[in-house]
Amino acid sequence: MRLSHCLEMATNPVLLLINPWIYDFAAYDFFARPLGLLYLASYLSSQGYAVHLLDCLDTPQARTGAFGTGRYPKEIIPTPEALRGIPRRYGRYGIREADFKARLAALPRPDAILVTSLMTYWYPGVQAAISLAREQFPAAPVILGGIYATLCPEHAREHSGADAVVTGPGEAALVHQLAALGLPGPALLPLGALDSQPYPALDLLFHLPYLPLLTSRGCPLDCSYCASRLLQPRYQRRQPSAVVEELRHWQSRLNLRDVAFYDDALLLDAENHLLVILEELAKQDLSFRFHTPNGLHARLITPEVARWLHRAPFKTLRLGVETVALGSARLDRKLQAGELEAALRYLQEAGFRGEKIGVYLLMGLPHQEENEISHSIRRVKELGGAPVLAQYAPIPGTALWPQAVAASRYDLASDPLFHNNSLFPCWPQFSWERYSRLKRLASD
Ligand code: B12
Ligand code: SF4
Image (cartoon, rainbow, N blue to C red; front, side, top):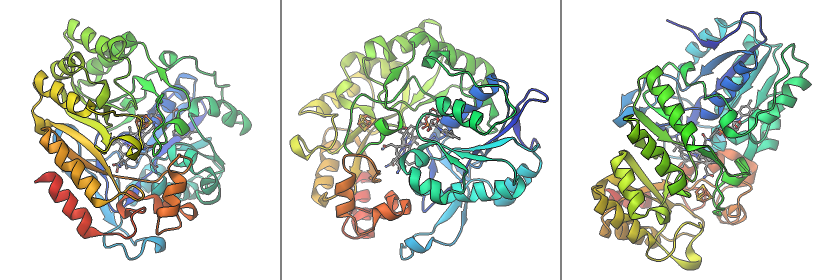
C-alpha cells in the first residue's frame, strides 16, 4: 500500500498538506474533494517544493451512491460539551486515527505543515489533525487556511493550534507566509490570472471517482446568507478553451467522465462561457457527465441553456432557489416572479424528467415559518420539480448574521460549533418533528 502521495523533487524543501476530518452529526460525500488545497499543492510543487498530501477524507466509502458519491466511514465520538442534548450521534468522518498516525510516521520530516479547513463548525477536526501532526513533527510550523480560517480567524488563532492563520485565497498569502517562516525554499512566484495556474493536483488523491472542476471563482451577487464574497472577493472567470483543455487532460490521464462543478455562479453569461465549453466538448467528441451539487441560478436558465444542459448531459441538476416567496421575503438576489416557473418549464421541454430537477429550498432561516417552507415544497412539486431541503448554516460576516445571532437560542458568536446546520440554530427550538414533517412532505 502506498502510504502517501507526493509531488517530489529530491532535496527540495518538504511541505505536508493536510485536509482534516469532518466532525459532525452527519456528513455525506456529495462530490466533495479539497479542491482549494489541491490547487495549492500543484502551485507549490510547480515552484519546487516537495508536496505530500494527507487527506483524512480520502478513503473508501462506507456505502456508495450514484456517480461516486457516498457515505464516509464514521466513528462515533463523544459529543462536544456545547452540543450535549442534541439527540443525534456525533462522529469523526474519514480515515481512522490510527491510519492518520501511520501515514504521518511514514512521511519525511516536513519544513512546514499546511492545513486546510472547510465548514466553520468542523473545526474540531482541524484541531485534532494539527495536534497529531505536531506530536509527530514538533519542529514544523503549522499554517492554517481555508474557509473556517477565513470566516472565523480570531477563533482559529486562539483555538486551532496553528502557528499562523491565513485568510482568503492562499496562493498570494503563501508567498509571504513561507518567506516569513524563513523556510529554506525557493521564493514563491505570485500567480497571474486563473488560467496561468497549474491544474489542481487531483492525482494526489487515492480515491477519485469524479473530477471536481472550477471554471470561475467568486460570485458577483451578494445574497444575505452567503459567504462567497468574503471568501473570494473578486469574481473571475477562466477562458472556456482552458477549461476544455483541463477536462481533456484529466480524462486522458485518469479516465474519468463524471465532473462536479464547484462554481458559485456557473450560468453567468452562459453564452460566452458554459455554453462555449459544452459546445467545444461536443465538437471534440469528448464525453462527460456533469453534476452541479452547488445550485445553479434558476433565472439564468433559458431555453438554449436548458437544451445544452440536457445534451451535455447534466446528470445531477440542482437549482439554488432558497424559497418560492417573492419580494421582501427573499434573502437572495436570485429570483423574480415567474423565473422558477420558466426555468422548470424550459428544463422539462429540453427533456429533463421533473424528478431529476432538484430545487434547493433553504430551511432554518431566522424567523422562517414552517408554512413558508411547506408552501415552497408544494409549489416546487406543482411545477414538476423535486424539492431538496438544505439546512441554513449561519455565517459570520454575512448580512444575515446579526439577525441569525438575534434569533438563535445559542450564543452563535461564542463558538462556531453552533453554526452547525444540523442544530437548526436559528429556529426557536430544535424540532425533530418539524424537520421530519418537512422532509416527508418533500419526499412524498
Ligand atoms: C463547492 C462547495 C461545496 C461542495 C463540496 C465542497 C468540498 N470541497 O467539500 C458541496 C456542494 C458538496 C458543498 C456542500 C455544502 N456546503 Co459548501 N461550498 C462550496 C463552495 C461553493 C466552494 C468551495 C471551494 O471548493 N472553493 C474553491 C477553492 C479553490 O477555494 P477554497 O477551498 O476556499 O480554497 C482557497 C482558500 O480558502 C485558501 N486555502 C484553502 N486551504 C488553505 C490552506 C492553507 C494553509 C492556506 C494558506 C490557504 C488555504 O486557498 C485556496 C485557493 O485559493 C463554498 C463557497 C465558496 N465560494 O467558497 C461553499 C461553502 C463552503 N459551503 C457552505 C455550506 C453551508 C455547505 C452546506 C452545509 C450546504 C447545505 N446547507 O447543505 C453543505 C455541507 C457539506 C457537507 N459535506 O456536509 C458554506 C460554509 C458555511 C460554514 N459555516 O462554514 C459556504 C461558504 C457557502 C456559503 N453558503 O456561503 N459545498
Ligand atoms: S448567487 Fe449563490 S454564490 Fe452568489 S451570493 Fe447568492 S448564494 Fe452566494
